[in-house]
Length: 555
Image (cartoon, rainbow, N blue to C red):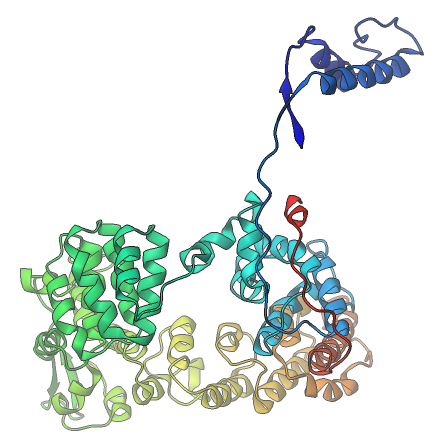
């Protein structure tokens, strides 16, 4: 079968352009070629365009038809229940509302799509083939959707992405661009792909082997390390975070001498996460020389003597010599030394005290914020929950924070080292004491759906804010989080909040109506989320997932 290609000859190469120009300008301003000006000019323009279109098509030279795409791969996963498939179509068809103004009581369906995808992936369902174009379009516009959307789309996402340039992100996001990786035990195939594969394929191969056989991945990387480009060495080295162990230390120590500063810094960071490494010991010795207990004071006090220079050894171990703008060099070097020091070294250095007792000690000469901030970073890097608890302090502490937390961002990172239940309990206590004004970042690190105590604390705080006549728009972010993260079982607790009370005299204009709408929308969204989960759980007639036709990719 032949298909049209390009015109053989165009006897009047400018005729079409003249017609287009006349259409754009209007026949009152530009008379189409071969037409008389007047009332009949628009009709004459359309007639001329129709004739010119037929002439152009008739002048196309036939060419050999392109090869048909290979059929889409089979997806062995079970198909969605019909109700869930209809729900997916509704979620994908929803469009965000206009920016600004009141949202009303209708749920924001696009904001529920990530949770729906996560639930469908947990249950191992395959998507209806006809939904894949809309799913990929949604993931194209929202990078936060891509991991879950591509997992749900399965192998056909890569197949479609090879046919439609708009979906090329699926090739970049899929390890190896969808290339089938050899089995780690097949040493010949592994070596061939490692030596000859594209960069994305090699990264995917290294990550796959590292996940199952860390030592084998490290040995594979060693074979070509000296000949790799600096940017590639950095990406490969980052893969060693998975399964990082003391056995990686010799390789990382050699990487400290790399000619790339970024590679050296990454190697130093990884070594500092190994408390028993030689680098960690060197950093502990340096930091220990800067921090000591001063017993001359009435109360034991931590004294700090920051380094006066950044020598070659410190640079080799990852200390960045140039301080950022507005930061003193000595405090900059000092913070890096403490951050890379194993936290287990401090009790012995500071009189056998526990982390909580150490953090409670006064620090001389205004060094407390630098020292505690560095301990915060160390607790996050070393995933040390005992130090994280000490630095967080009690959630009811004054000034909305513990003795070592200097910012909401650091408190959120420290919370990430705790278990989900403890994290939710701490944030619930924080909200009960300090309200919601500073809780947005902290809520973002809590597991979804929120545990019952945290959910109750959020709803109670919203109700208190409404009763206090607070400006309603300042809580829209927390309300949006609650719609996505509250346990659907909490919907019944909202029934008592739907009434519209009398507006206090000192309330913001229209605040009472907004709060009523917001609580109505929250309850409706929770019930919708509950229905979504039921649809994914309820068995029903399903349609087998059939292969996509090649023409599905043409959109």
